[in-house]
Amino acid sequence: MSPKARRDRDNALYAYLLDEQRRRQQHENLRLLYVALTRARESLYLSAVFRLDSKGAVRAPERDTLLAGVWDRLEQAFALQMQQVTPVDTAPVRYLAGIRRLDVNRPMPPLAEQTRDDASLPCSDDFGRRHTARVLGDILHQDLCQLAGEADIPAAIAALSSSWSMRLRARGLERHQELSALERLTKAMQLLKSSATASWLLQRRKVDGAEQALAVLDNRGRPRRYVVDRTFIEDGARWIVDYKTSEPAPGEAPEVFFASQVKRYQAQLEAYAAIFAPNVPRIALYFPLLDKLLELSSLQ
Image (cartoon, rainbow, N blue to C red; front, side, top):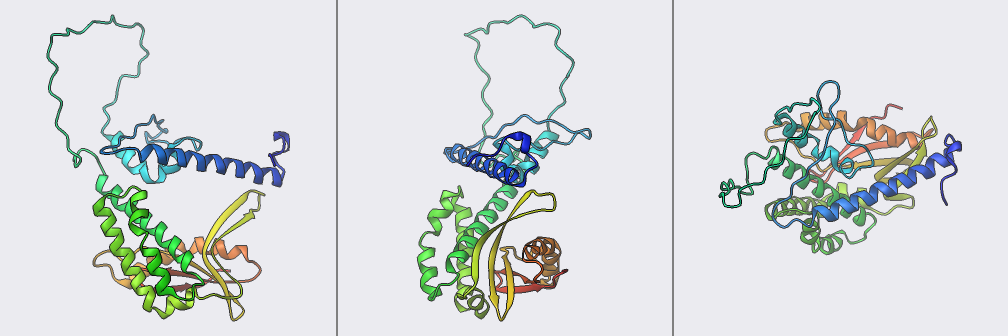
């Protein structure tokens, strides 16, 4: 079913179908970019042409470009690279200089030796850590979704763990990143095996869902999509639980860490809860690496 003619673009159904079409194209762009990036064997260089805003800051790429799909992960690295670029003369060129042929007998200067740990690449280590954390979070979310409703959690974890290395490598992690992620995955699953909280959270209920996709129209008739990690009804109350794989920084007090997580994700959970209005669900964050269920007070 194709979107209606553009002259009826204010129609809510048209807006929904057009958004579906755009999302399919965005997903196709991400698949194309993934194939291109994962072909690299030793090194990978990304290049792009940017425009600057009135303050000289790098403007985000157009949303239909390949770079737009990963801009949230690469923005800082590109911004730092742009700070090191020497300004060029932007005056219009009035003529083209004559082309000179190089002397084929003149020896070329030696190329500067580079290593994979080139210190001139800003944020390489930071980007690697953030990418590893993102991949770890994705796999933990996927596995928690698979474990929801399982009668034998330890057996299900054993089956899932056999695929961890392959899934981590498929996402482009290097060996040291893979080992770090495996250590944290193992830690999370060991906690789940013996956790009464996790057992309660993942048990099957008559009304429940895992990685449940929801679509609603906002007050302007525009489609909004959400994915709820875990939702169920317990004793007549709807629960909405969002999984978070973050941990306290070294030396950070647990109460400070949890307070910051509540502040950061309260609005996100409130948006989930609003979908079920006029009912007021109970909303919570679950940290599988800490085996901590943190219930938030709803603002509704």
